[in-house]
Length: 247
Length: 247
Image 1: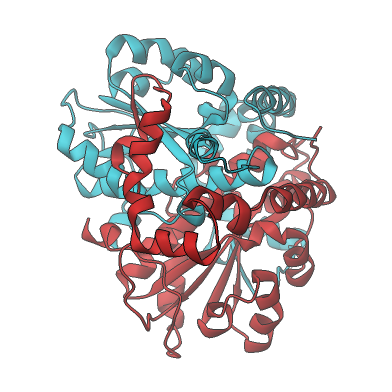
Image 2: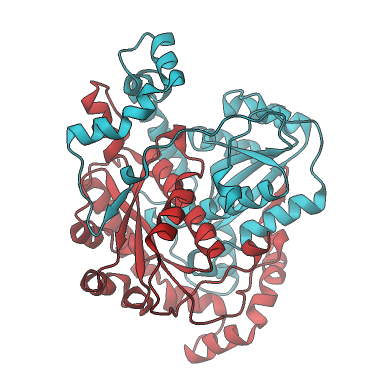
């Protein structure tokens, strides 16, 4: 399907708002995705208000499209609604654990991806914001997410004001294994990453950051070990506060 | 997009195999989905061999479509490939923690959902198998998944031999919150679930299982608290064995 192969993350948007009917159609398409036992373990918080977007922008590390795009969607894993339904029906729920953190994360992700496909079919552009997980506690506070709910990811949505080139991907064979997982030898890792490393943009990242190679740009600049460990510990604490047992 | 609104999970397949080019196109469409920092933290293990499917079937609780569908895809969160690239480049990775379990789970889920959309655009049908997470250790053993890799979900893919009706969903307003999360009052929970509870199929589930209401079918039959806790503890242990720090 051409639409899927044309997907680009859009980081610059027109001011044009999104028609309410179109936005509802986008969200409804999200709900048509498969989900765990039809429990629909997700919610979305729609932010359109300029002041509210300005408040959330720093939590998304001030990526400019947060304020610029007409709509920001915070996609949440949500066992709260299901738990409340259980409580109302004297049904003994037991979903506050790692298994259901992952089930709800998957549900929320499939919901999000269907929204992206539908949005693009209406000529809209999207960009995922991974920052939702990094600052989960701050989003919980700002959006008043109750126990059982946490942000999984966020999307900005709007009419594109740029046409960025297609992003590179590893050769297809890098992600596919036939019948069993065939672990990689060092030479194979090198050859699978050769094209990525040879891109002009990659060389520029390495140079700008004064690193020896592209992998070091990831580990020393973009996603540093110390940051990963700090944000992961924060996330663990946040999930516990939201009522999940993690031990 | 009509395709998204027509999605049904298919549980009965024709014997017809999937053309290799079509299957590659499906997987390639998966890789066009957004992902964390373009790190592509996922892999897919393709199972076509009848004996291999028969071996995996019990791990999927013997759902008959596992043996029947021509292709089974086990979709994995994968930090192994990235870690190996880092190691080869003297780059100090730090992705073996909860934050990256979730990042990789999201990456794998978006990859999976794009594959579903592409598959359906070729007239194929799909069904997600949530069992991948329940028996993660057993899949790791059977598919020889190395440290840093775990199954997130699985898909059967093939040409549909049934036309099931569209599955119900909660009213759209149940999953959408404007600007802030508006927590539910008991009456609202009841009214949002009224239609679902009134379906003939729901009434039949309640009756067959000798329960008082539909919520109890979920908590006492389909996803029991004791099972949830058991499988969650197993999953935690498995992820630790795969090299993730969870404390």
